[in-house]
Length: 260
Image (cartoon, rainbow, N blue to C red; front, side):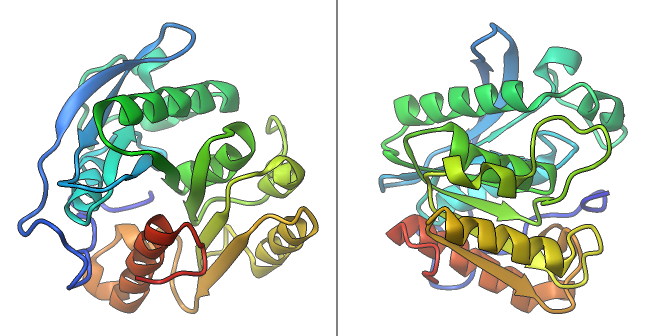
């Protein structure tokens, strides 16, 4: 499980909020290129031209990600969080008892990237966002890395503990195998105590990005587990605050080494 039931996103660090008390959000129904309808959560910033498409973990558009979109908006970044399961679970809201695993097994990389493209288009049309980033967690972090190779107009991608290796029978290639096609700068945030993403995988990804001359910055937080950002904030306060500052600094400047 990528975060426990009832978990909430960590607070935006002091000094980085444009709106005290958080921004509001609204449900929207988007249509992908294959005519699939899927749900998303849109949150508009008070001002600014940066926007982020949030690709969730394996549970799809969980309330955690709806609130996270609103927190990005409160920090001055227009945000939209999307659901992966419109093709198999429809557009209704779902609770913690949702059996997501059977739906994850039916997803495909190309249709998820098509849904991301639809979310990018909606964010551009519904807000003042012109510099668009894709940010993802776990399964979504992997797809954020893929997005750098699949979309020509991105300002950058951020992958929180996106898996870098391949599993037996898995379709396509690992993120490092797509590095030569990546165009958007890459920020990768990993936990040093995450057995699913060993340091060797991160090193190989780093080498592939360097060889492809992709602007990037990869950060590993010592002692932090997989999904450190999705757990009780007090457990990993320093890592969460630094991750917020790096993601928002990247979105402000376009430089993945920046820190707000």
